[in-house]
Every structure is written in structure tokens, then in C-alpha cells.
Length: 69
Image 1 (cartoon, rainbow, N blue to C red):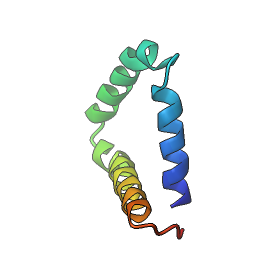
Image 2 (image 1 turned 90 degrees about the vertical axis):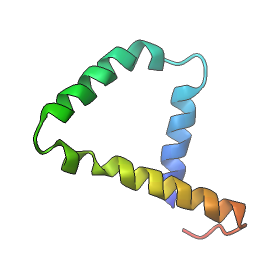
Image 3 (image 1 turned 30 degrees about the vertical axis):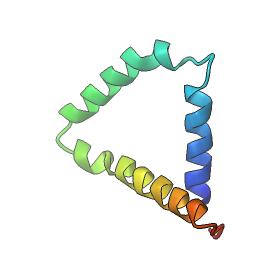
Image 4 (image 1 turned 45 degrees about the vertical axis):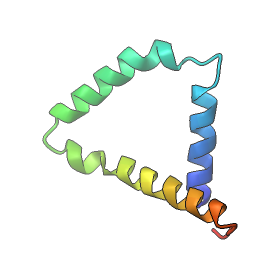
């Protein structure tokens, strides 16, 4: 849960204004496109699935008033 909290904080920082994210979007897209061309990319990108599940679990715990983790 600590990882999910830190990731959520980072995401908020990156999406709040002023943010360097719009300027980085073309580079991020190129990076993802390049990674997808790698035959081993699906295994490398599985971390994003983990992040989504961890942040969803954190939100569910917070909605239920549980602060373990």
C-alpha cells in the first residue's frame, strides 16, 4: 500500500500545473512505442498492471476506512 500511496502522490505531482508532462508526452510516446516493438515488452510492461491493481486496492481500502499496509 505504501508503494501505491507514493505512486499516487507522484502522479498528482506530474499532472498538476505547472507540469512538464505536456512537453514530455512526445518522448514518452516514443519510449512506449519503442518498448512495444521489443518482443519481450509485454513482460516488461506488466508492472503497469500491478500499479493499477495496487492503486485500486488502496482506494478501496480508503473508501472502506481501512488504513493497513
